[in-house]
Image 1 (cartoon, rainbow, N blue to C red):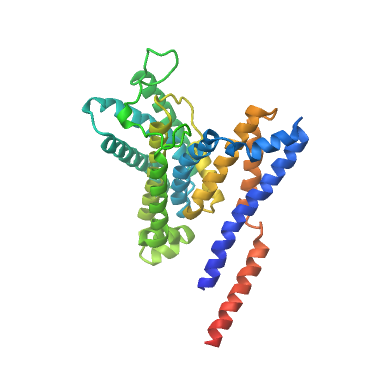
Image 2 (cartoon, rainbow, N blue to C red):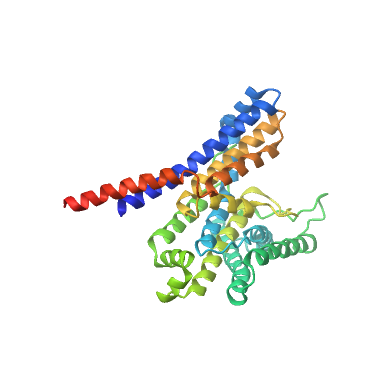
Length: 362
């Protein structure tokens, strides 16, 4: 049994990598036909993100929010609920954290106290917001996708109100908040790279989430509820409570991601539209097959592809929108259950036979 589980884990990892490679090859082929200088376009896309420290830092910058929203979606997926409120939570917590940081500016708190306090606030707020569509779904049977999408726009409009009426700096010519206090911002870790110390927070949360999923009773309960709610009820698991708590923790991850992105990447809050970080987190979680241990890999690969598209658009005649082609192919490959399924079943069958023979020999 252990051998079979090991084969399944290895195959899931390889399946993600193969899907990316196939999509990658298709994109490179597309570049040959649509670019006037295909060799330059291919070089910019493949190697461009690594040609300077600043560009590599761009990969890390893009990956950090995807780690948070991807981990958040893993919690929501684990109980078989497609709650996409992470999109609205991300922008809401970024705005609310800015408001709180400005309100507490006069306290003179040291950075090592101020930043964790703001992240904790964002996690709590994100968790509470995520339970709204989860509770409506669990108690009233409303479609959680519809209610969470509606919540996203409610949160967007609320952030616009806060920005324009409560924290807007009228001394600048564009719509933006007052500058966030310096003692509430993450520092740049590697000079002139854009890689900030928030990366370590993302890695810490990643480790905690993986432990929760693989080593705790709650992780087992989430998987059981997601696979078979009726069976979980018969086991004595409080199904509704597990569903709502999983949604809350997922919202907390997205909330921390929004706050961290704001405190690390921006000196002012000025988002007036949804950022797509939450929806990109959905893609990252789908690519990771709802398994948090793969989130670092899928977040990095998605960030690398996006950075490559950015380099291509700035140095060749290819628009950055062609990244949509890459994402579409990757999602189809990984999400399709039949992709490499025959190979997977053959490998698992052979592994099971070997394990059975070993058991019989003993």
